[in-house]
Structures are given as structure tokens and as C-alpha cells.
Image (cartoon, rainbow, N blue to C red; front, side, top):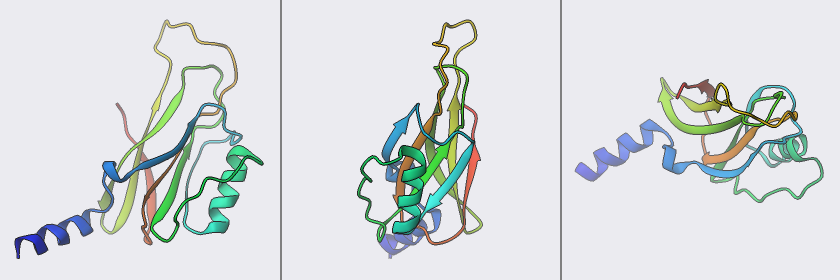
Amino acid sequence: MLLGLVLAFAMQTGPSKSAIATIVTDSMSEVDMPKQVAARTPAEWAALWRQHAGDTALPKVDLAARTVVAVFLGTRSSAGYAVEITGTHDDKGALIVEWRERRPEPGTVSAQVLTSPAHIATIPKFAGVIRFEKVER
């Protein structure tokens, strides 16, 4: 009975941070506008990857068991920016994908080059509403 309660609780809370599997983190995505997106079908995944990486080979993802989630910061004016998908949690039946942005520390020297940070990952398959939420450090 206790095992049943634990399993029921785990199913209600949604994917955990440990269930996040990174496909790629990149500072030079071809997506130049801020964007958060989920891909559930092969067509959605292929289109998302093309937007991010052009004609490079599409990484294999088992979309029967996983959902792709991605956060793109858009164009930034220097190096030192990054984005990380940090976790997920349930909010009244919707899945919230938490992410954070890292910025260059004040007073540090950063290369003056345009960057477009991105983090693309998979989470266990989720068929409901997925929302993205920026969290502070």
C-alpha cells in the first residue's frame, strides 16, 4: 500500500530535475529571438532543430517516451550569457519548466561578440499543458 501511495505521488508531481536530459547547450543558436518551446512529434522536433542548428544532423529522441523542451535567450551582445533548464514542477495539472539565465558578472571582461544562448533537453513524456517560468538564482 505504501508503494502505491509513493507511485501515485510521483505521477502527480510530474518530471523531476533528475529526469531532465540535455540534448545540447549552445551559445551560438540560430534562434535569434527569445523563445521557449516544447516539441512532442517528430515533425515538431525536426522543425525546432532546423531553427536551432540548420542542416546539422538531428539528434535521435524517443518521442514516444520523451518530450523535448527548449529555451532560447535570443541574441545577446557579448559572451558570458547562458541559459539552463533547472527543473520542472506541477501547477494544477500543467507542467512548469523552470529555467534561469546567467549573465556576465558586472566588471568582468567579456568577448564583444553576438551570442544566442540555448538549452535543449528532454523530459519524460507529458501530454498536458507545458509552461515555462524564469527563476532567479
